[in-house]
Structure formats: structure tokens, C-alpha cells
Length: 116
Figure (cartoon, rainbow, N blue to C red):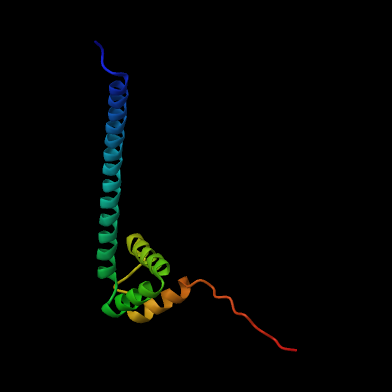
């Protein structure tokens, strides 16, 4: 006699589930590759920052990154871009970092309240 229809259905479901798991594993490999590439890029960026920033400038940048992570990342990217383009001569000290932070800081809106 032939197999029970429930057994056939169960086997189909198992095959579909195995196929889904294989697809997830392949997708996970891509995610791992992307994560590794991101880690390498971050390590390269940190190396550039260590090379072109003095200790004081690096401390100031880390303080900014702790309070405003998005802005800190933006400044790090800007410094790395300047270094890669060759527009940095020597190292950036704390005063130059302060000036760079002021330039890159988004304009803050002021609210003037007038009473009549």
C-alpha cells in the first residue's frame, strides 16, 4: 500500500522548512560578511584617527561622541575623509579639533521670547 497522505504532507512541510533554513544560513553568511567589512572599515577609521589626532583632540572627539553619537560619527568620517584626501598636514591638535567641531556643528535655533 501507499503512504498515508498525512505522511506525504508532513514530508513536504519538512522539505520546505529545511529549504527555509538553508536560505537563512546563506543570508546569514552575507550578514556576517557585511559585519566583518564594517568592522574592518571602523578599524581602519580608528587607525587614521590615531595617526592624525593628538591625544587631546582624540579625547575631545570621544567626549563629543559619547554625548552625541551621530555627530561624533559625522566628525570622525570628516577627519578620515580629510586625511585620505591629503588635506591634513601633521596632526590635528585640540584647538583645531574645537574649530572643526564648531564648523560641523549643526546650526542651533534660538528661541526669543518677548513679553508685551
